[in-house]
Image (cartoon, rainbow, N blue to C red; front, side, top):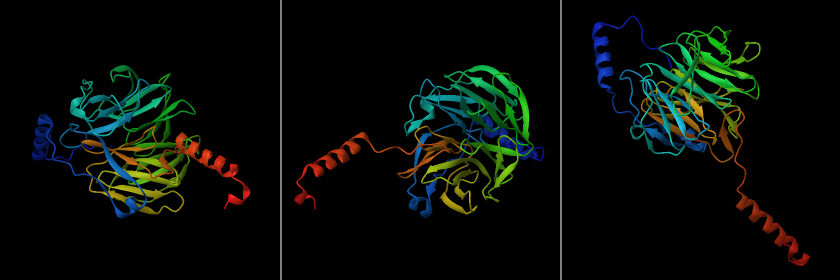
Length: 331
């Protein structure tokens, strides 16, 4: 999620942008579809929620989190926070009354830590704690142009990017410490290896969370990469990257080989790991769900669903029946 407002806009462009902003106008958005490679990998794409407003010149939904009270919380760039009642596909943003009052070009990332939800507000540079209904609890810290955010459950710290640096933020004391100087955007954490992955100038870079030393470079990824997430189970060893040009790219961590998994989407920004093992991808006006094939999931510590109890019972009964037969019938 880049801060796209710059000093080089012409007067005509400024008029157009503010006109679009005033009327909340955005062109119809294209649907992302899987490539042959994505289909061959057994992935599926569905829509979790659609109909989000946009700023007219940029973005709609960005941050996603899961309140302890249930449902799915979504923060959008126009300044709204929604709480969807369930984590099921096919929901419409217009059916939810959002919490308003946050600044336009404001809410960006969301993350959960210790049962609390934290949000970055790019317009004010603040990191804030939210209540489960999306209202403001209190301001935690300020880092200037606060953008990406991810929680480290091991240390109880927050990592926050501000488009030029990455900080460690103590959510209890509000203490802010510089982690690395890098023009970072989207962030994701591998808790198993202690590696923080960040989008930096078209690359996904990995940093040791203790030393800050760079330990990984994906190489250049086309399409302006933004949010990224790790695969688990049969997808382990790969990073899945959402791009601003509406593509989804898989990068193998060991070889840096890139595979185009989906194309034709709108502006892709942050991604969020769903506790059910799927991956939620933000687009200009909707949130897509990427579901892994059997045996796969998303997240560095995600667990592959075990066989159903009914299936296990069937296996057990079959085995008992087999061993109950006389030896001559065991063919």
